[in-house]
Image (cartoon, rainbow, N blue to C red; front, side, top):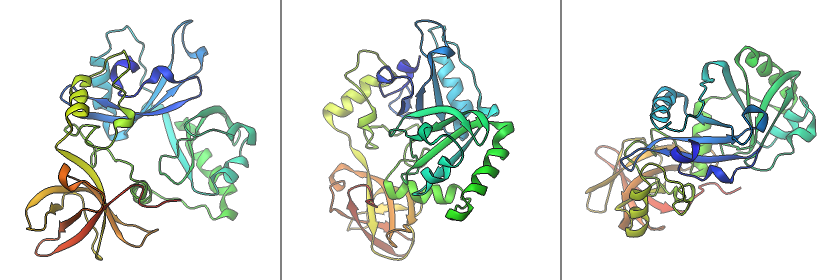
Length: 306
């Protein structure tokens, strides 16, 4: 089932591996993006594979209904969303903080792998090293009734290292500085992963099929008419989601999908869709600010290079 609904090739995953993928719809768009975790063999019958899919919280019901509609394989599906909590320890001191709460060898993880064990005396915590904010770190999946205990333990052991509680605003600036797409902004039901620069998670040569595979093959072969680009603006205003992108003659050619004032660069940055002829690095575009416009230059990702 995972092979038939995901754009990436989950068949390549070994137990303990994670993978970024998307769930295409039947019309060349994206139902959601997701992380796929290959779980241990003791969670399924002999000869079978077990996976955990982590989707966007706002899309849980939509994704569940979509995947159920594609389940023609007698695959057992369990929704553990309401029983599971997620905390992310991100940043340069993440390893040091987590090592105080568990066996340090358990978190010697390669990028996009995970382990499962005791953290802060709490059993069965799944520790993942996907670093979804782009700043490096770990994601901890835990039973919801242990979530507060894990939170308190993390904040206590990280106090002397300056750990702080942050929310979606910080997550958004971090992921945007790395050029990571956010579902609902940069990708949605009408955007193709090829248009969004996600060809690398759209494996068209694999034997198994998935929704819109033939559409994406056409996009790859013939090209697309628009592309998601990154830009740095010359000004002080923040380019907001939905702002129009203009050419030099003030013709509307696209729209901003994500934007912020980059904390690391101290410049307005953003992403948006433009016609392919404006997508080349170095192209000059303009962001509409109402009665005024702000010049911007198309740049290569990531915005912030570590």
